[in-house]
Image (cartoon, rainbow, N blue to C red; front, side, top):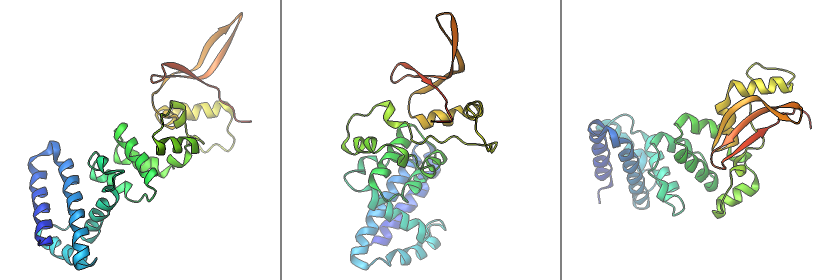
Length: 238
């Protein structure tokens, strides 16, 4: 097999496809890059790892500047990471930009978590990047991580992060309960994401009556997965 001609042909086909099949071009690109990664792995065993350097110089001239060494190496890395039995069924379910973010993750369990979250929640590339940057996986409990590894049934409460990140945009030096509530209310979507799936905001300072007196719930949520209300009481001390 002439590996260079095969790789060049696939890249040219992908370039043509990307111009005429907008609705499915991203999936075609991911499949093409996966196949090219496989070809590079085979070529490596015959001609050595420097084959990427040789092919990239020719492809940049003959197909396009974006097919430089870095891009070709990512294709090879993509195949190596996602060809394993554990992740191969998920290898074409996201965009190439998602996979670029995921390729930096060495821990397979961590990678699977972000891959599944991206697919299930339809995350954009930037959403995925922010979750990785905020160490979302690391903030899950050890018990939750074990459940994910063993594919044990999980519950909504398993995905409440610890700690929960609330951005202090006003740079308050002292955080009172009122200020904490204000920071949460300024960015409700981020707060709900930190809690996990299925949460929706009802209102803050929700008034309820006990006997002859009224109390106020700091933040009242509803979780549609559990079909129940969730009461949040804010405290800034133990």
